Length: 228
Image 1 (cartoon, rainbow, N blue to C red):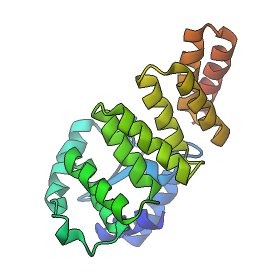
Image 2 (image 1 turned 90 degrees about the vertical axis):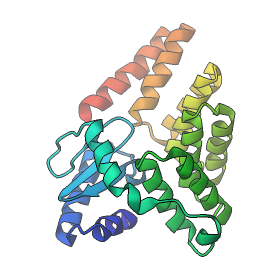
Image 3 (image 1 turned 180 degrees about the vertical axis):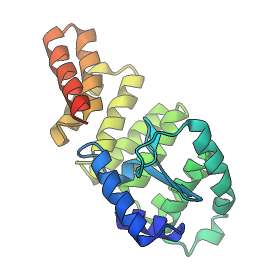
Image 4 (image 1 turned 120 degrees about the vertical axis):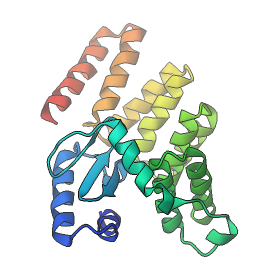
């Protein structure tokens, strides 16, 4: 939360508005979902939040369209031009991590991947960098490499619900349905309110012929979505 507040303040958002925005954002995020699971973008007078499902303005609750975000990203892209490794040698792991997030938001996936790798060379314990690098590799079709990064993230933090969920997805994408189901069960052992894990586990159980188990998790998913 402090890192998010600092980013907003550095972008010129007033302290009062930062406080209001973060309070509203915490109320809008599903239970158990951390601020690190979303991206914040500031341009002009607008603060926009983006996660993997949607984007919206926390102050108004109004949703934004992807082309709006692309236009906003283009405006901030010149601020995050890549630097060579020697130029980064004195930069902290946290500073590099923030640069990687900005590059990713600006649509510069290859540069973001290289920066996350630089983060992990400085601080192998930074779980968020492992998860984000794994996700980028996952999106690029490098499933085994992504799986290894998610597993490494869980070794460093066994209660990282995002790493556990992403592991389930990458296992499912590799056709490892049973292992994926176990991964989703691990997600729910960490956070039983993680709706997406209920939904994905329901699908896998239905495909396996476990209609009762599938219905139970589907009902949990529906209940959580209604509550959110």
